[in-house]
Amino acid sequence: MCGRFSILDDQKKLAEHFGLDHVAEYKTSYNVTPSSDIPIVRLKDQEKELVTCHWGLIPHWAKDTKFQPINAKAETVASKPFFRSAFKHNRCLIPANGFYEWKGAKGHKQPYYFKLKDAELFAFAGLWDHWESLDKTIESCTIITTSANAVMAPIHNRMPVILALNHYAAWLHEGPKELLTPYAGVMICYPVSSRVNSPKNDGKDLVEPLSK
Image (cartoon, rainbow, N blue to C red; front, top):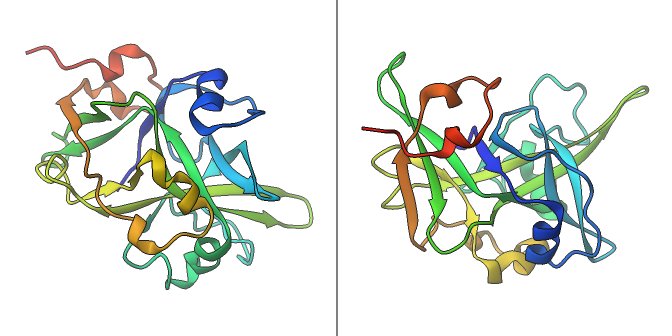
């Protein structure tokens, strides 16, 4: 799964990386948590735009907002009713600099930080949707996960789908499900402070290697 990540780069860097003319304001964080408003890149009239969305998908057809999954499985995202419409019509890229996962017994879990060796900024494959009620409008998103690669497997059996730069356009333009594979490039993983366990904590120390 993917339940925490970091987005540290400013608007200029995101604009350059994703080829955007305009970037909405967003909050950078070393400890992005579910239900946060996070930046996503999506298509509008076949042009890319960056907006912020609530992390936890609410389909447009939902009767209420009780169920808000932060992740969707690559294996079933095209067929599962909850995600099927968004998979067909509402793809997005979710910018990130790294993400966290935990290993160990309950109460003694060690957090680890994952990032790419050759790129500071990358994108998760995601879905978004637009939900409305009589008095509220929510745009929301979810991160797609897949099976773990060799770096991730010792820590967890799932990982977020990290798209190669040359696959961004294909994913946004309704490319095939075959794009949703474990990351094949070089990744770095190391243990970090348990301070990341609390959503209240933020700061550079959260992504620094744990001192031995």
